[in-house]
Every structure is written in structure tokens, then in C-alpha cells.
Length: 228
Length: 118
Image (cartoon, rainbow over all chains, first blue to last red; front, side, top):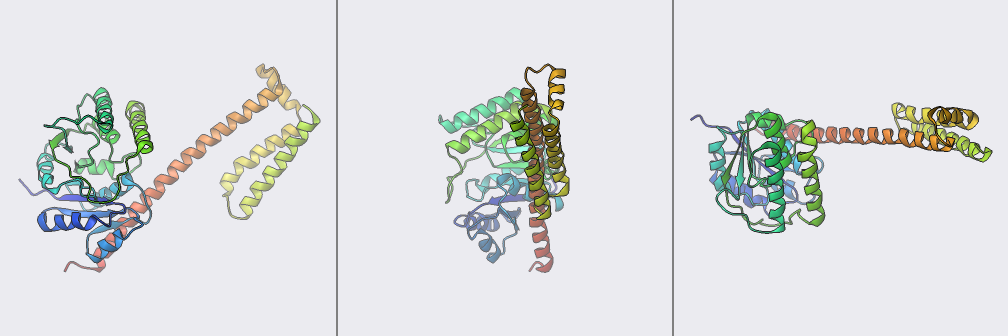
């Protein structure tokens, strides 16, 4: 098997407390993968840390949000002709020991999702109710069962990198996965991973953002998708 | 239509035109975007001077009162304008995002060219 060029895209917004640990671990233990940090217009010293440590990083001039940050990474992957791009969050939730299993599957599939629930059951919580609902509407519209649609740890192959690197409405979210399955014939595979608790910083999730997120997903998957 | 309403329409049209031309003069608005508002205020002006236009159209379309027709007409015009503005904002947001991403990529390319691998 020829060696695939793999790029780890690490979106970072105000991750000064965890970014060093995350990137240093990748550099020390996983030199076979290239990485690029995307500093999403952070207000803290994330950019300074990246610069002084000599990390390879994309410095966005303004804050774009996760979708824009990840897309910047995909543009870089596209320009440098990478075979595979994987999203690794800057907060340390995505464990690098699972990268290999994602890369192994990307030869046969277009998208490989690092899933928490392939072999393991979902815990019962509000969050997982949301996850189940999104699974449900994706199954309904595409016929494909995705157990962990909200997992951020996903690998995309070259074809998907090209699809996602340019244009709006292509953020790394379940509705984009659904769109790629339905309209671009993407083959999706899930592999079991464990996720760590975040090292530092605060989660985006609160009631308001959750409601907004779910509304967006339902609207996008159940309505807009039919017109894309 | 009462003289009072005619006067209000007339004044509104004049103020709107003044507003728009001032915005263009102060470089706060592009001429392309000013066009819509000047045309709109011209219509309002026309309607204030010749209210018969309103009567004629509302009769033609079967409205009970001309004011109903005039309100519905302007609601419709503004609805379309609102939609176009919203779409325009989306496009601008996309352009800003694409530009920022490109800037970030160019920065890294430049850095890597000027700081060759140790």
C-alpha cells in the first residue's frame, strides 16, 4: 500500500491552555501525519503560542467559526494535494491513537467517522436524544444509518476535500454528511473511538445554541437537502 | 385620498430622496444601491401628486379602498427588497469567509517560502 498523505486539521479558537499539549503530542508520537493548526481569530495567545513553537498554522484574520476554520484547513489540504484530511479538535477531545484506524478505512470510503457508538451503547441524556434525532432524519432521507452523526472526528478523502474546500453551507456538521451521501454518493464508514474530556476551556453547548443547532439540522436535512 | 395623506406622502418622498442622495454624497452608499430608493421615492411622489393612479389601480384589481391597495403594494415591494438584501448579505458573508481563508493560506505559504525548513 502506498503511503497516503494525511493532514490533521486542528481548528483552534481561544485554546491557549490546551493547544500545546495537543500539538506537541502529535509532533512527538505521530510524525507520520502532517498537521495544520487553524487559529480562528482567537482573542487569547493561541497565535503567539503557535508562532513561538514553530507550529504549522493558518492564521485567520477574523473569527469565522468552526465551519470557516475547518474549510480553511481543507483549502490548504486541497492546495497541497493531500489524500486525506482529518478534523482533530484543539481541545484534546479527539485522541490521536485512533487516527490510524480512520486512515486505514479511508481507502475504501469517502468519509470515515470516529464514532463513539459503533460497539458501545449511547448513554441516555438530552444530548444523546439530539444525536438520535439527527441519526433518525439522516436515515430517513439517505437510508444510511450513522450512529454518531455529531462526532467531530471525521476523515475525508481527496474527493471530499475537493467538494468541501470551496463554497458556502459545507461546514463539518451532520447536514453536510447527509448532503454528501445523498447528492455526491459519498460512502461513509464509522469506526469505534473513545473521546477524552476536554483539557481546558468551555464547551459551546448551552440551551440556546442547542436549540439553534437542532433547528438548523432539521431544516437543512429535511427541507433544504431536497433542493441542493 | 385626503390632502393630509397626500402631503405626508409628498414629504416622505422628498425626505427619502434627500436621505439617499446625502448617503451617496457622503460615500455611504453605492449609486447602484441608491437607484432602488430613488425610484421608490419617485413613485411615492407621483402618487402624492396624482392620487388618481391609486384609485385607478385599486378599481382595476377590485380593492375596496385605495389605501388597502397602496399598503399591500408597498409591503410587497419592501418584502422583495428585504429578500434581495438578505441574499446579498449571504453572498457578502461567503465572500468574506472565502477571502479570510485565502488570506490564512497565503500567510502560511508566504511564511514557509521565507522560512525554509531547518
